[in-house]
Image (cartoon, rainbow, N blue to C red; front, side, top):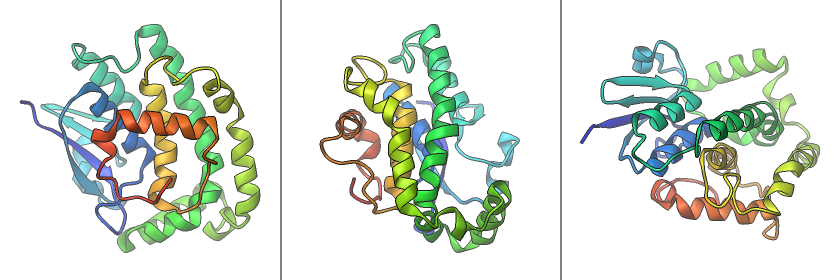
Length: 232
């Protein structure tokens, strides 16, 4: 059997894995039924993934192939392991899923970040803290403490951002239709990011998104069973 290794972002506790992008890759591997090992990786350990030609995770080593970026990993798995269950359900569905990928990165994650920033920084390994602070403050043009200073308003903004997602899940069980597909894993990755770093409750139990989240998680219990995280 081909050995697969995924370099997976970890916090001060090596067992706490919180990157939404790494979660996407792990969920995709689980969907394909492909066994893999993970290597805990921190932000400043660039040398460990130098073979990928860049400095971010996830990085998947699949036999002789080295693939970085969660979207590229999903496309690689779909093409290299076409005999396994499809992540997208066809080329047209893959193209539509690309929009969901961009929406999650550019809208959903940005709405979550002010809610999570304080808790997230608390879980970053000590060796990464200066790097994390410097890169995030440069990116957003503000101090970390300013990014997450008004959590109540940030939660209200986040809830408004969820409206199209909620409306969709009121009429179908998964974003992939009758079965979870990669689009579901993209969005679930955002909630797993939050669950990995913060005890804050983002969804009420009667929320259609909460019901969807639980359904998708149940299908991927093989990947999620050992996650070190807070309760939903």
